[in-house]
Length: 136
Image (cartoon, rainbow, N blue to C red; front, side, top):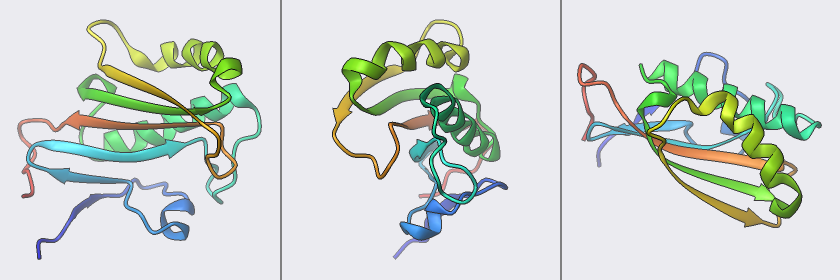
């Protein structure tokens, strides 16, 4: 059995331990980042939607930075939203603050009915910098 090469940000939030998952795993030159939500350090959701999206990106960016990446290294994005008919345009306005310039990553947006008290979640796959060792 191989050992997972886990990336853990310095400012981890309580959800990783509570729900037993790793924030990200390095493998074969790629970084697989678990879905990130607008969680405060104690695991509670940021109540205001736009700020919850911003906090989800800050949590995501902390993981990417810990792995030596940035959002510019992201190749594939999946976002999940509760009530996308109400939240999509608002979320996409905030996303533009973090997305960067074209060419953009691929993206899949999924409407869901439940995110454990959150309204927005983002998960990504990023390419690791060439100088990073890739775990198998």
